[in-house]
Length: 198
Length: 261
Image (cartoon, rainbow over all chains, first blue to last red; front, side, top):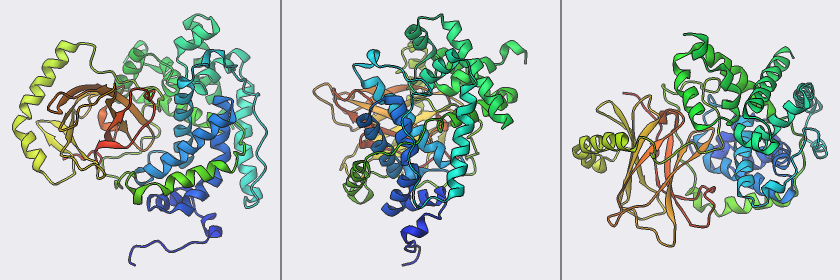
């Protein structure tokens, strides 16, 4: 049938760029959705787990993220955001929504940047080069974060992973609002410098 | 532009979504006219994106894919999927200039300056009175430009056999607009309608509203950035106990992005 996507084996899908996968998903290709899921499940689940702190909630968010990809793939515009950015953005939103629905949120222990679960073992189909590239990128960011002051890491973590405003962070940490604003501003500027230098 | 007018100090909080509403609006209004701040925003945006990969990857259980697969299988031949929208000439790469992805809805239902906005809305509605009737009859799904304003048409979703219709009216650069709906059934048991604003990067929760006995409502929409930054507007039904966070099947939906004439 004219215009129909040729069938691609699962091996073939692994070679397709993310944007091309999204195009296939937009055409209701569930195999493409699964491939995207396999590529990003660790990142998305890890990010959600970092925000929410429990596996069940993180899995709920992961399901929501890929469901949203399925629904909105037809509207994805590659010029606006890379696929990875799009996915992590959705994940962050869903995680913060889940945090806000939680009644027990005030009692939740805030995680430090290093309070993170075990690394995912490499996918069998992932090339060593891809694995190294991905690990290097993550290592660069974590190294940069580690160079921030602890109080800056803490405030930035609450803003990014918990989605708190400056005012909410100030209340949570019992700090002046101006102090929180300064810490986050300096943290982001320092990270920008460190990551630009890499 | 003097240094005191720049918003560079606010940009880190802006990309994180940590600013209060006034600060967010100040940044959003400043950016279009300041290349320096836009350049700085690019830098913070790259940093923000990097934070997304700072957490280690962790393997979820196999049930996650099973749940996704089951949910996709219930998607009635794609009835819930957004229609494809080809990029238009006006869609510039905005990753480095766009306002931040904010988890928080910055939209309020026109509580501030209510009187002034109400007057403006009445003028808009009266001005559209004649042309609105024409719009209902139009078969095209393309947004229209009327009296220097952009009008997005919302139609009833395919799975809802309904005569309900809606319009979102806004200016090119405006972060304020008006949603007008007709033909929606009145809600019971505390349920309300909710407007959503969406582009390829995010979905923001807009104002909740109720309709009158004729199924009519006019709602002010006040965003942190121009409404033309969004390519989709949708109305959903929100049960009273939903917590307000979930995007459910829309009852009204747009099918096209912004097009300049």
